[in-house]
Length: 154
Image (cartoon, rainbow, N blue to C red; front, side, top):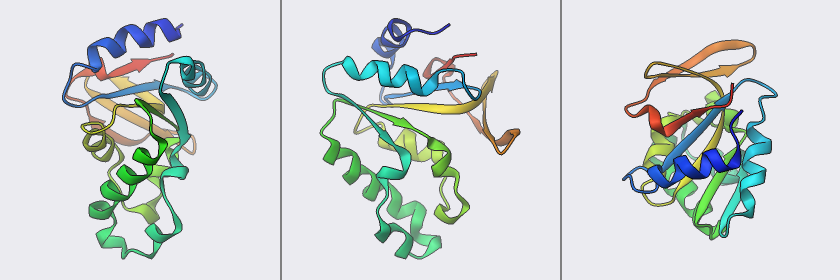
C-alpha cells in the first residue's frame, strides 16, 4: 500500500524535473482520493476537483479552439489557488468529449509552471498509461516517457 510518505519521497524526485507531474493511479476504491486528502497537511499543498478548474465561459469557446484555450484558462484557475503544489481529484471530467482535450498533455504542460499531483483511475503497463472509464479499463491510453511520474496504488 502506498502511503503519504511514499508519495513525498517520490515527489522529491519529481520536484527536480521540468515537468512536475505525479500521477497516482489505481482502480475504484484504491484510496487515491483519500491519499491526496492526507497530503494537504503539506504547507501550501491544495486539493481541487478537476471540474473546479473550468468556468462556464470555457463551454462558450468553439469546440475546436478549446484545447488551445484550456491551458491558459486552467493555468489561471490553478494560480488563483495560490498553492505550492496543486492536487487534482476526479480527473475523469477532463475526458468529457465536450471539452475536446488531451488530458495528459495538458497536465504535463501545466506542470511546467505549477507542480501537480493528480489522482487517476486506471493502470500502467510498461510505458502505457490507461484511463478507466464506465467500466472500460482501457478507455483511453497515453504513452508515459518516464514511469517514475506514475505511482500505482493497486
